[in-house]
Image (tube, rainbow, N blue to C red; front, top):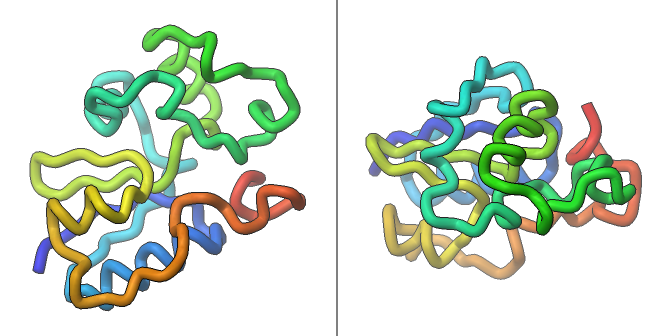
Length: 140
């Protein structure tokens, strides 16, 4: 069992399912609101590790869905500045497990790092199931 600080958007259906999966795998989850957290570049940057900048973004965020921001055209500095202004742009969840930082819910990565093997994983728990609608996942 590990303790996971889980930065989520309260009300997001996927984040709720992700937390349930982690708890079912016997992990302790400490949920925090990603939208009200006091982010700085130094606090946020470690979650993205060596991911390409385009993979730092929540593609369900309104500014991205409606073409106002193109994640493929952002530099690291631009992406961080945008995310500090609008945390809805941050790929969710962000998870901290001791000194390990993870952005998104890559089930294979999480299973390899902390173990999910005891839980039946049958669906994509990263993509918002409501991406075609005005969901609670993408709006405040």
